[in-house]
Image (cartoon, rainbow, N blue to C red; front, side, top):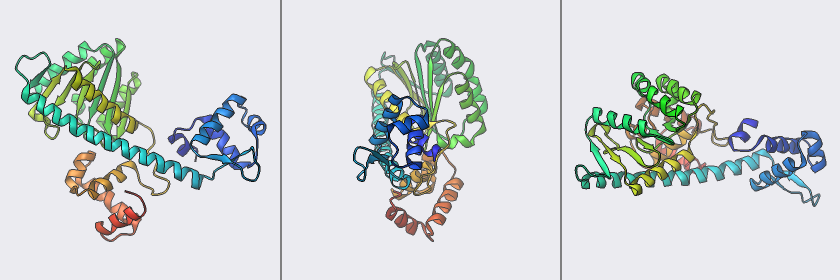
Length: 330
């Protein structure tokens, strides 16, 4: 249970207090201080945090005391609230992603060659040259989103010297990948390299289009998120860069640290990726498109759906959808 509580954001003090209150109902402040060894201020802060999460409530039998809400009730309610909040934030990310994609496309069409507010880049060499220039100019921060399940080891390794130089200068790196990269050895090796050198790495089932933002002053985004081979747009216009930063921050808030265990939902037993797959297929998306959005293969999509159908005791996807909806999985 401790792992679940940590995943929900509870402090070690709050976990200790909550666990003790479950084991010894009716204990007061003095008993909690004595048993946990925590200062009174920490115990009171922990109780306030637990009350905010509705994991402790006022006792009806003993006015003036608090009682712990059972994990079966309290944690289930908390998870439901967090899932609703996460779903709302993911919907905001999806809407922001669509808005940014339209804005980038419109901006690319309207750019005049040689404009100081941005530049269309055609060809991998031009894009790589721009990335190198942005990396050398970085002085504070580099934000990156990299959708898809795998990247070539040589491509990842080629960028490390420039990244390392920036890190030595004090540039902070935050990198966002899809959950599916956890199964790719080249990307996990690079993610661990970033972490070892002070960077932050998170993953999410679905992330925005590929983008790189430097110092919140310039950004590089694909002209067509569905086909990055068509070229990229180097943006320096403040309004567009600010929107891209907002898109990144929204996605970052819905992601989890790389290396953290992906907890299954205590009620449904679903992983975040499985829940997102159900949502995508429920919206009418075909297997191939859902796999592309999640950064996984068609084979993985079908394996995941087979596992979900088995847990729902469903003989068809239609039946699985109905049962998932009835159980509140969607």
